[in-house]
Image 1 (cartoon, one colour):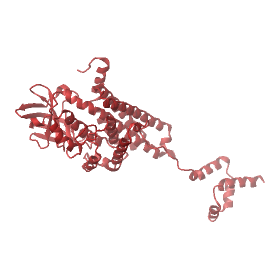
Image 2 (cartoon, rainbow, N blue to C red):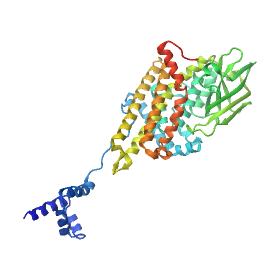
Image 3 (cartoon, rainbow, N blue to C red):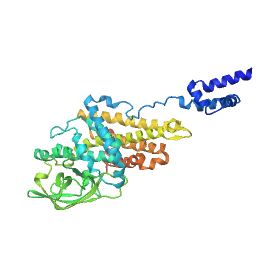
Image 4 (cartoon, helix red, strand yellow):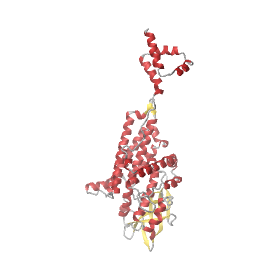
Length: 453
């Protein structure tokens, strides 16, 4: 009797989820009596393993939380219209840029076909009034920079040069005639601009060490010197050149037009970061620029610094975007990558990496949020922008390193995106002021002593 009861129990456990039609279909393929007999001879452990195997298909698919790098919901501070614009840009980057970006990054070429679609979004010259500019808040400007860099930092850099450095220089320091000529065309990407400040032998010391010279001759200025690392310069319609006036020793800005006599631009090759950005080495040899193409309100490096202060905040947001792209890519990967029979995202050590990444990312986001608020209130200082640049570029390096680590060997393959973020983070770390220079700007503010040489 005990044997019969045992067999009945085993049969019940085996067939309780199967309806009569399924039992009939099963009976046509196997000897159910033999199945019950074999099941009845299993011990409890073996039976449990069998039931676990049979029940695998009965569980509902696990519903995972969305992949979202905005853990503290910064997007909630946006208006409905701003949020819609953010999502339109995200859709453009995901649909039109992401599928082709690795191809162009590897070839170190620029995807010119995306420019008309980028122009149609009407986001260039984000915070400026008039001249076709959208006149959005600094917060929105930062959000857009983050969305661009979240997919690709090169495209974000291209946009930052156009919208921030070039348009910002003309908007803040140009005459009304210069604004009317250039800003509407730059805003719609009908013209492309570049910003020429850094030199082959002068990077951090540009405030006092520019070697490019400008000499006035009547209504014409003669420029001589070199500029290096100048993004967009190989195809720019106008390059803003910063040069030292030999007459008074002050830094002045000039609108050097494409095709100007004495202007030569050579593409820089073999970069390991921001490979889509077309950086150029510019050589000016007795390059003639009319007085009407001198930025009329740029009379010293302090004026140049006003432009840099404004754009440095956007670079901090850009660092956030790079880190967010790496984090979200790594999180997605760990949920799909199976080892030892389950996703590696379920492992404690992987979750530790992910949470450290998210902690850094969230700290960066809340910092740049406050930075944009200060910018909107017109209370932003050099040290505010510099602290954000230092912290965010450092933490971005840390985030992309963790992202690379959780992906193992696949982390160095371009197809998984994180390798690109790792490389591009190195460029963000250095441009718009190195860590050391920005650190000393903050150090001067908090101690009252300048440690600059």
